[in-house]
Image (cartoon, rainbow, N blue to C red; front, side):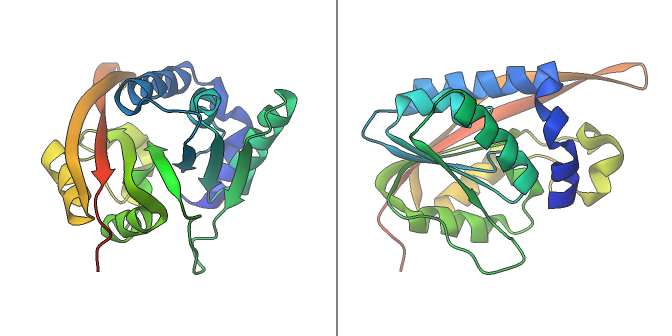
Length: 212
C-alpha cells in the first residue's frame, strides 16, 4: 500500500472495530512491558490516525507521531486539537527523499507498520540511531501468515508477517538486547465464509551501545 492509499482511507480508518480493539491491546501491552513515564520522549513510527499514539500520550512527557501519510496525520492532529493535547507533534516523512528521525528518543513504538517496510534492517538502524542507550523499542506486528490478511492487496505488501525468530533477529542485528516477544491478541476476519485468525505479537528490546 502506498501513502496515497492510506490518505484515501484516513477519514474512515478508526471506524473498523477490530482495528480499534487491536490498538487498545497494543497500548495495554506496551504499558505493561515498557512502563512509560513522564520523563520519556516517545516516538510512534507509522502512527496513522494515532490510535496507539493517543493511548500512550498521557503517560509520557513528549510524543512525536511519524507517518508517511499526510491524511493520517491530519486525522491525528484534529483529534489532538479537539482533546487539547499539548505534548504531541506530528512529523511527515517523504520516504522517497532522504530523511532522519528526531534524536533523544526514550521509547519508540510501532504498530502494524513493519510489514509494509521493504528494508527492515535499514529502518531498524534508523531506530537505533535516534534512541538513547537503554531506551525501549516496542514493535507490534502480525505473526507470519499466508498473505490473506490484506486480501487483494497482498501482492503489494513486502512481508506477510514475521515469525518470532525473524523479528527478534532484526532486533539483535540492530544492537538491541534483552529482546522478548509476547502475544498481544488474535485478529479474526471472516473471508470466503471462513473464519481466519491472525495473531499479533509485541516484540520489545533495549537499545544497547551505539553500533560503529
